[in-house]
Amino acid sequence: MADIVKKERFKINNVEQVTAVVLKYDIAPFTFVFLNPRSQNWKYVKELCETKGKVVYDNNAYIVFFNNTIEHITIIKGIIDIVRGWSTVYFFVNHIYQDIHNTEWITCYYYSNQADNIDSYCIGVDSYKCMIIPCKLLVGWTHLLKKYHPTSYKEQLQALSIKKCNLCPNFDINKFSIYKEDEDEEDEEDKVRRSFWKRIFGF
Image (cartoon, rainbow, N blue to C red; front, side, top):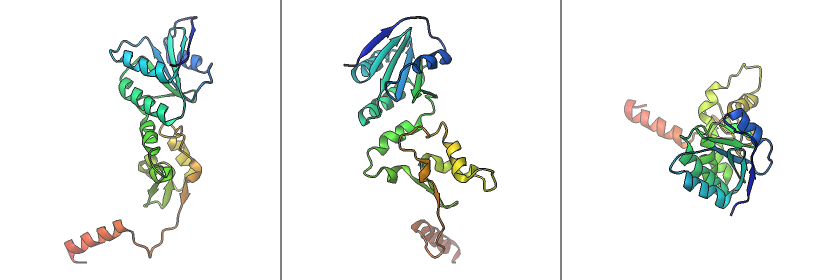
């Protein structure tokens, strides 16, 4: 059963006030704040919160904190899947407000923890730019990295990670690197492509 703390002062009704309340606590990295939810699923969500999380009642806000454990991440993923369309819920990671509609990394993080080697799940490769990308969610965005930008590729990539995956516990920008392509080495994808064109055009 979760710990429940109650505090009452004034009515909270916007994201600025919610953020101010969340900043008062340093309990766990993941935080949900609910303001008088009316969904028929609230009873189920509340039961999950009170069974596994730490709950605080502050003013009219129902606040629940979760830790960075596999069990809690599983619960967080389940809650997000249920409340994604609610207007009465706020989600924070390390006190930073998150758009609950843009939390793909939570699901990705959940699955990564099932891999024997987390890097084998998380790290992506951009073979066109010859880059090792520390999060595969960013591979599709590398076309925005510009050679003549005043900042480095690594710095540009870190900026791209904001609101996409930068808060993921697995994300480490220092795993970014550029490799030199071996022109004498042909990977399986290239072999298949060359075989296809040879069958079609005879070369």
